[in-house]
Length: 193
Length: 322
Image (tube, rainbow over all chains, first blue to last red; front, side, top):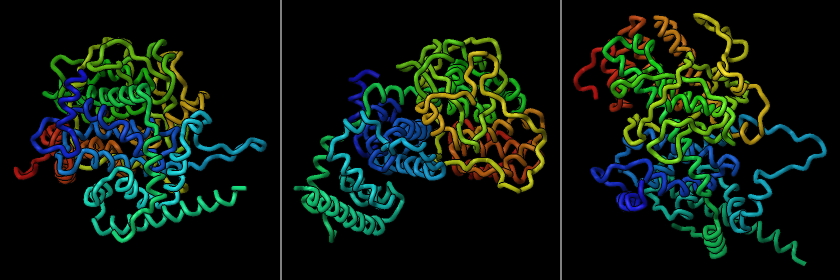
């Protein structure tokens, strides 16, 4: 697809795809939302070394089901819902296959490679660590609302819960996030000379 | 909202979002090619039996061969591509006129190419894909004990490849996101195994070339990680559908049905599995079960090539059924 065609299609794809609007084509959706899906998966806790595979899993579903997408929700919300399921799948597999203990003498490694760790900024690293303190349900809602600026009803649609439940999860997630941030700040303060 | 984020939290989020890195363009391109490769494989195999659509479903299976994209996916060691291929070969559906499907063994070049396990299906960098052999990596189908290596359909020696434009490929609209992982299709320890029509040792996916990767061969941890991510549930689904396919090809619908009963559904190939149940029940003469399965299938997946085949099966559905 040429960039011009992509842009023209892109305008039809922004957020809510109206029923009867231009048919969605996979290439446009991919180009517009692949980075969003990747970041969403990272924010939902998919380890960096599995982000590529998980993104591919999301778009395999997208490729298969795009024709059935009716535009009742925003495309972004729909994609996030798929990403959420894939992230849960990754998490389940990780629990099912516990990491083998390292041979004695080897230091425990983080999930990031040294290169990735170097690239990742302090703020991003801290954000992800704080997100790790939330439950998966809280995390999904928090990511949608606080990081993606999604409305509560849309977030409810993405996570498959009602608005009241999502509101409650968001409130709890915010408290949890703030508390985790305060703990981090206190530790940081204590380390200062 | 009674509780809003404080200024420190908001500032942290603002900074993090401005610094958050996304995937590189090369990474995005690899992912895209992997998705399209797997989808091409599924579409080509879905198309494989349309050529035989005038005959019975079983005869369509017998005549089904694979086209270039499938061959490329197999050559790439593409788990998803092969899974989709096998699943589709069980179910079959319309093919472009004259499309003859041929599964080819991976060429040494293809088997030796590639750098990582991400490209579970492989297509050329930009659509429409060309017929050229695709760079791909020999991946191990599964590193876990619960996911046996998928079997492959018989492999021919004729790599006659023909391109299929991505844009022309059918998609299978599904009503439910099929991303729920499939539990490994293994029996509980100690549980008596149900009788299977024949015990076949697991076959390697590409047994015809010496350079083809061995599933048990040691590999880099990176490619093992990539392959195993996709391998677990999908490999198990693949195994079941391949066994079902063999039973149906042999005219043993009852055994195919028993195989489906022994295993749980709900995976990424849910539509194919449910359609297989319809066809197996038809072949076993269990029309009532076939009808129920067909109704269930058409409620969930009312459109697409598989729906057409389900409607054309032995069941007689009410006109109201979508």
